[in-house]
Image (tube, rainbow, N blue to C red; front, side, top):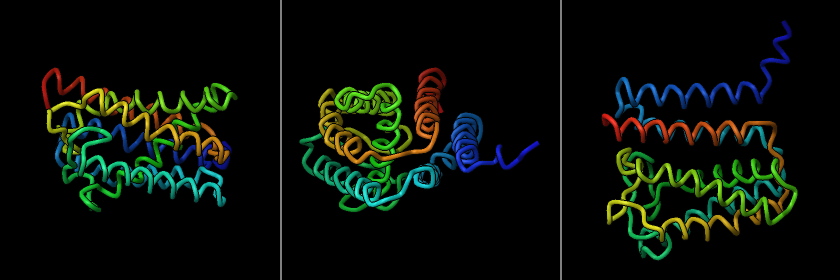
Length: 217
């Protein structure tokens, strides 16, 4: 058996994100939920690191990372303090160190989401605007399954208890220029890593949501 062909950077990366996400699901449902929820920053940072090593790094890539982080953080800071973009909400403690009441990991998460959804959209169409809109749609789809469980995981909480339609409009408005910039930058990400990470995040939050709605954590 040729292990060099199996143990590629891409395959190892995909294996690791499956290992961490599946372990997280099992750990939250069947063992020490608070410990595994508290390990969320580790999972996010690992996913981001593996995304980087499977992405062609050049000045466009670094500019896009900086743009996603800065624009995402700015939108969240304005959102938390003024409620004009996503509605009235605040962040919990699970996501770690905060700058102006917004966890720095949220800026990293904006990078992850733009990169993986933009990359997935490129597989379906060559049309610039179609893949841009598809990328935004994929982000909104993921947000729809995250929002109901976010307060339970102490990620963030809306003052009204649930995310309103206002939140999803805000997400689309912030995501759109970043998706445009992503496709203009022609970022190259290797293989199926983005698709695997998107599927895992969707399954992670969907399974936990179903479990919580049936028997709770």
